[in-house]
Length: 282
Image (cartoon, rainbow, N blue to C red; front, side):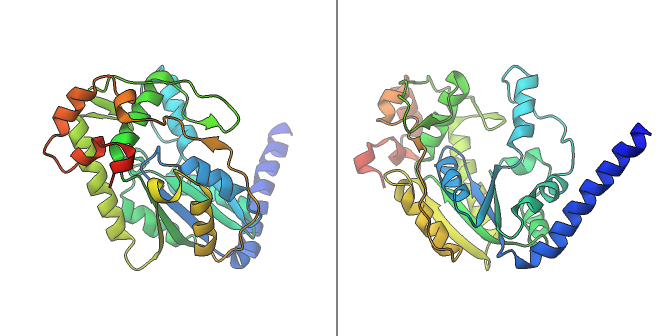
């Protein structure tokens, strides 16, 4: 009898999800995918969008799975087995938006972890009503790498706006940077970010795309990105709060313990400019 009741509850839950999706999806204005490389203000933007009454924000939908892989391997980023198909995980989650926009985030390297080619994944989610795409980049991707490396070594990915910061730094292993579930030389990471974002841009040609950068739209005032996103979605802005502040401010020379070594490794490359002071950055 217990098993029959449990089965009945599961069937009822699935039926409710189906009916909600069937009747309310046509009234939904659309769905949003944000693609970003990480450490670029995506969390602060997502938290603001989630405060809007017409947006349901699922953040990094697959991050709990990746986080469990880290936990199972004592913090070491090791790829495990997806418990379900990535599209099915999305289907199980996105009905909660009801009549609102549903949005979530993904990073280029996530496609390898969920075992989907970017073009096929985007093709699949378009069939689920994903109509708006936001590319959030960070021009100085060296700072993204440094921020990720510090977070991996010392913890603390985000700082609440009302909390004090602890100054942290890292000795960056230029021959073997270990972030993003990968290990490779610094220069290769930088080159791969270039190619990954170029691939995404190519896939999204002809679609509704909003392009934001950390430097122009979030660094000094995250409200700039929020207002652009609302305009992109044809939504009126609503009063929201900025709950996070910069995690690793300051010059790179104060964040990278072996700054001279890193400088020499990038000298003469297309990424050398990323070593310059904030006021001189491109």
